[in-house]
Amino acid sequence: MKNILTTFTIIVILSCHNSNKIEKKAKNNNIDIKTISNTELSKLQKFGIDFFAEGNVPSNWKLQINIDDTVRFIADDGLSLKIGYNQLKKDTINGNKVYSATTKDGDIKIFITNKECTTPIHKEVFTKEVKFSFNSITYNGCGNYLSNNNLHGKWKLEKLGNININTKDYNVAPFCNIDLNKNSITGNDGCNTFGGKIEVQGDRIKFGLLISTQMACGNKSIDQILAQQINNQLVNYYFKESKLYLYLPNDSILVFIKYE
Image 1 (tube, rainbow, N blue to C red):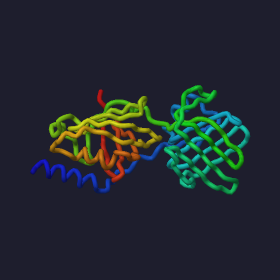
Image 2 (image 1 turned 180 degrees about the vertical axis):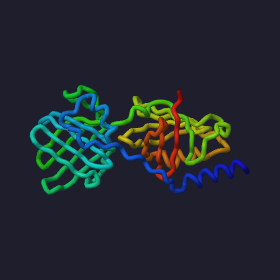
Image 3 (image 1 turned 90 degrees about the vertical axis):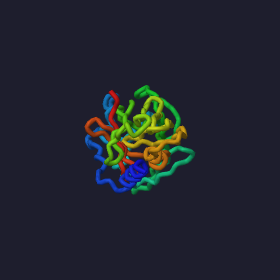
Image 4 (image 1 turned 180 degrees about the horizontal axis):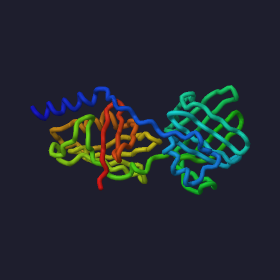
């Protein structure tokens, strides 16, 4: 009876609106995307950029997308555009992103395809093929969602909402392991192991289908969160005092601390 009441209490707390808000991403409107270096590219995510792309066809160009703010495009041929992200129409076709908008100057279309490619500018492998079209001109190149490298590693669950985790209540201390090299997550919810694919999109994590074992356990609270709030969901994350916070769709928060 005690376990049932404890689980019920946790679920009620997690389903309530949490007054904590996601910390605003740092913004730097002075970044010149026309002259971004390799070093600056690795730091863009800290300035609120969620997606970056570049190419040299038909001329050198760069694109940056801040999902909470604006989309900026600049090319050596003189084209320079800035539009609010919320002004874009967003579609997904066969798993690929398509953005479009009509402005007073012309029509914009952005195609982001799940295909590895390289550019002669940085000579690194990007995970997305990108086409940016403005009126009759199409710019071809490559891009990546940016991520915070601090995500990589093994994390121990510390809090469920406002409830501190007592590892004695679980068969195994609940944890997750995020592998940015494999774009995957594995872990244990305190009873069952789980795993699946992820894609980090700036300060968001897109979780794929999570597969878990099906052992019967007394405490089902974390298992329910995985199934209802994380599985196939887009979840915000942020760091505070070296801890990882996952801000779930129901406004609850999971807090993790990194294993030493």
